[in-house]
Amino acid sequence: MSLQRSAEELVTSVVELPGRFVEVASHDPLSAALLAVGAGLTFASVAVLGYLSLGAFVSLFTVESSRGPPRGGG
Image 1 (spheres, rainbow, N blue to C red):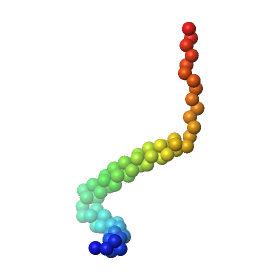
Image 2 (cartoon, rainbow, N blue to C red; image 1 turned 30 degrees about the vertical axis):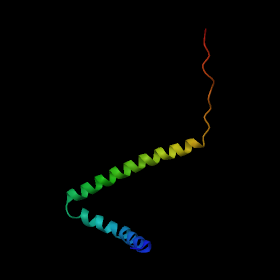
Image 3 (cartoon, rainbow, N blue to C red; image 1 turned 90 degrees about the vertical axis):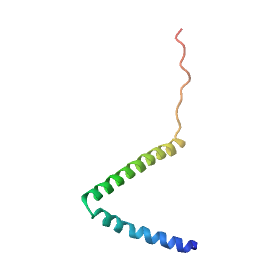
Image 4 (tube, rainbow, N blue to C red; image 1 turned 60 degrees about the vertical axis):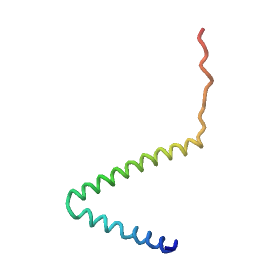
C-alpha cells in the first residue's frame, strides 16, 4: 500500500466518521449515553492537558521577581 493511498483512506474515514457515530448512537439510548460520556471524558482530559501545556509554555516567557532570602531578626 502506498503512502498516497493510505492518506486517501485516512481522509475518507475521517469524513465518514461523524455519520458512523450517529449510526451507533441511534441504536438505543444506552449507546448514545455511553458515546456522550466517552466524548465528555475525552474532552475533559484534552482540556486539562491543554491548560497545563499552555501554562508551561507561558511560564517560559514570564519573568519571576524574586526577593533575597529573609533576614534574621536577631
